[in-house]
Image (cartoon, rainbow, N blue to C red; front, side, top):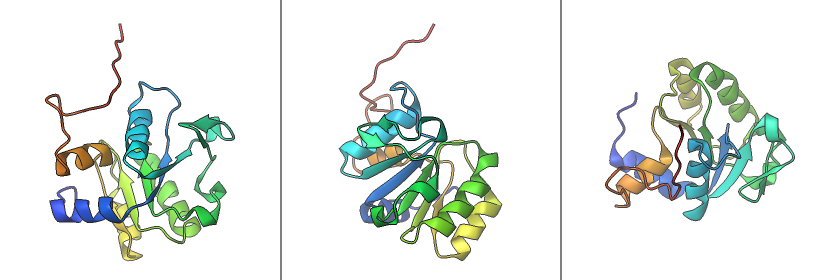
Length: 158
């Protein structure tokens, strides 16, 4: 399902405190970076997960190689997936096995996996597919700008 009620999305955004962002990039013009930055600015604790940058820092926070590497006392309650759809099953399985406080799996725009979503939902985990928490937060709380994306980042590619 990719048609979610505003009340469902709002309940996720108001109850979430700690978000592990899988596939976050250190490049400030990448969507994963500015989504993670925005969520951090809104008061969420953002935990970067990217094996290519593990041990480094993104947005002033230690980067973990995978979800299993995140200390359990960090109490991750949402995983935001910035990876291709074919990577989702392994990420969901790891999240279910390693994150005892997990409440939500959120798959970014263009990311969907029905079977992995069903496995998470069977365990009582809320699932959002093919949506962006930044966009939904802005839409639900009246922050969308004329272009729809208030990133605070201006870039130009040739």
